[in-house]
Length: 113
Image 1 (cartoon, rainbow, N blue to C red):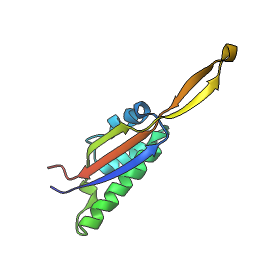
Image 2: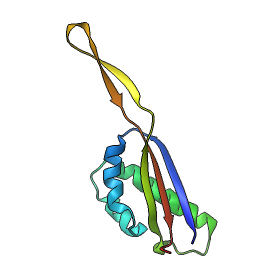
Image 3: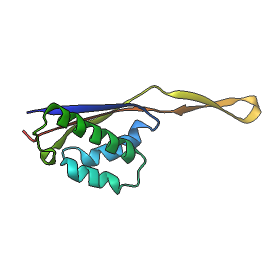
Image 4: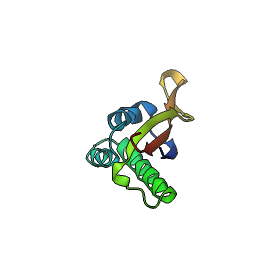
């Protein structure tokens, strides 16, 4: 039961939007997940696809003879990163706050066992 991990940090997109795409690939075969992400029109799909390819590469570095076609997405989750705070001028000399959210993405691939 071998597995490999890839973490991508400080993605400039809110965790809510990234989680929407992650939920659709969790538990699927890696080949299916990559095809799904390639034809997805979400911005988060680019980051997730890159992380998935990196996790596959990490797995092939561990075990040269392992067939990557039987890999599954065992875990895929997103955590909230630090928020970038900005101010927008508002009426009567006030300023309203803008929170630009970031995400930390973790993808774990392994065999089905």
